[in-house]
Image 1 (cartoon, rainbow, N blue to C red):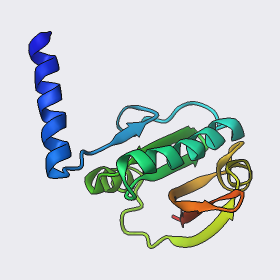
Image 2: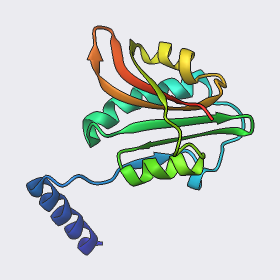
Image 3: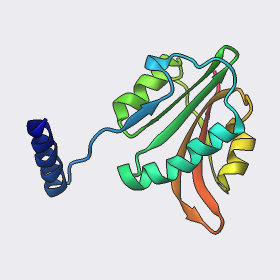
Image 4: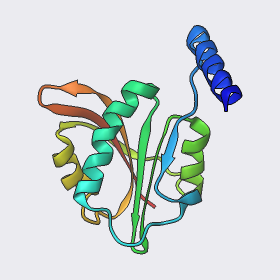
Amino acid sequence: MLTLKLRFVLLLTLSLQTGAVFAYCVESGSDGALTDGVMSQGECEGLLDNLTSDTKKHGKNIELFIAQENEGYYYKVCNSPEMKEHFKENFDIASIQPTCTTVCQSAEQLAGQFCGDGKSGIRSFQYLGQGKDCLKVKICNFKK
């Protein structure tokens, strides 16, 4: 146990000294497995709120992907280009050019408009900064 702690501290120290960035990825199911049902507006709102803090902790390359299909939903939050590509390949959208827009809304408004309560489709969200009483977010819609 002591060896593990020592390695972790050493690795953390080296990463801070070299400015290395680690891959960060959180997903709702293993390897794209859908969760039964529909994503609630509250769950979506929570993911959008977390996107803000995740971006501040792990860098500006963080993206939230949400797929809502008839069979269920899946989400992935990551900063790794490989993991983002894996999501796109898994949901067969790698070759699709998304339609993107930038908005400034609260997490509650974003969830209600784009991803809560079973809004079907595949979208990505990228936090761009804080506006006055709103989150600046780039939203991309992938249409099959």
